[in-house]
Length: 393
View (cartoon, rainbow, N blue to C red):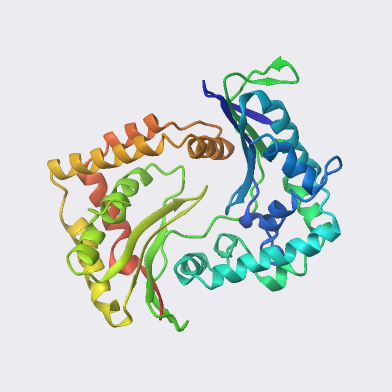
């Protein structure tokens, strides 16, 4: 198993195991199983009961958690440096030795089904998965991480064990530790950065381009919920840096983003509007989301189109480009103060690429971008013939 050590002088250590196994590794008959295995990992091992797992970390004031994405599952812990050995022992125990006892499976099914039902009652969140399923229809990247209640209720302990035995192999994982020094079994470890030959779980989506479409679904919501977007760039595609800056200009978290100014500040049509991008190992997605009064949907879409056309047709001035870079670099610097999230981001990047990407690396990429780079990406991705729209009403 590859080991990633991120030196730190803090009294708090972060550690975890990142597994190259997420929802895209499931077959159509296994949807939601990766996430279900994540839940069940805390329910008993060969050595510990569920209560003992909780108390082993939280009894020391630490925190033990996990999450599942499309391409990975991550188990992690925050704990005082002096208890790092205990944390590592618990982590390897739940990841590689969970028993998924049938009585716990029965209980946890209902917990996960409640999570699914809660999610389905939140259209502002549900629309993201629905939209991704449209963009990647027929491909494992499209299906919901949580799965369906019907499928989750059908899974057994044996199903979870088979999934773990296939994917939770040491060569398919990264052990990551952020601490003052790295010792395992009393010996200092040599840390090597290398990428293993991990077998692909499925074929890549066939094409970046999809024909444009507008899909309207009647969900009986008070607001209209709207998404507009397209497939975008993979994690290894250098063009994603231009889209990263473009996305922040257009609909980033700041109130002065172009979409926020056009839809919220000037016209008071929305409470929430933003744009987002995600890069997978072999493809990506970019999208805009907003919620508005149903009677204002067409007007909001026109304003969105105007902002996209501005970026397609007109180069940013030097002063606009400098301001955009300065803002994003400032946001990155502040985000880097969240040590837990920084450690998790480094671990997942190392899992998939065998490399570490620091905030300084990202800032360096941003610094080299030109106005022409941004316009080229806008022309490639934001043209009307490239975009798919999904509307809940």
